[in-house]
Length: 247
Image (cartoon, rainbow, N blue to C red):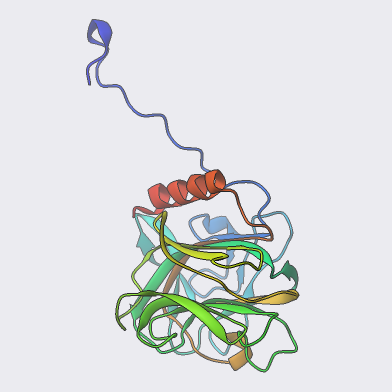
């Protein structure tokens, strides 16, 4: 569009670069100053201000500086033994919100994009005090899902690799249809999930309580809030991340 007196094409105002305030933990691989260790990640620093930094919790360390999404650095997980984690968290599981930018390169049964769990669990997803944001075949026949309290929800789409996208999950209390999965800003699945109590640790790229279920794929950014964001805040963050990461 041409402006008055030959001013030329009007350019849109750039979106703010910071997500909604109040995040509990925030990892942003595009900000390479938060990554220690160069190509082999030894720390992924938390940008929330809570100093909840992730370090390798598996036999291997993921890579940085080896691939990009929309020209931005990401952390690359090999699907064999790469995983990051942090303990000492306090995440109430009645209401929470998470965002995850990334996806799988190769489908893997039960691979964990992100798991948040209670230290007393046998597994990282199977009682009231935990959830796991999974990829591909778990629950069986789905592309992406969440497990909580031996139940779960998922979005349909076959058994292939979970596509790279801006994924988000919001849990609103304990009522019916309390939890939604978003893909690139659109709700793609809604269900009622059980889950109360407090989770104390987070793993990225694997399901640490099972010491396995590694993702072969990448993470560009993740954010966890200990509250359920409003509809307007969900829209803001989703739009910001979709534009930033090119989805």
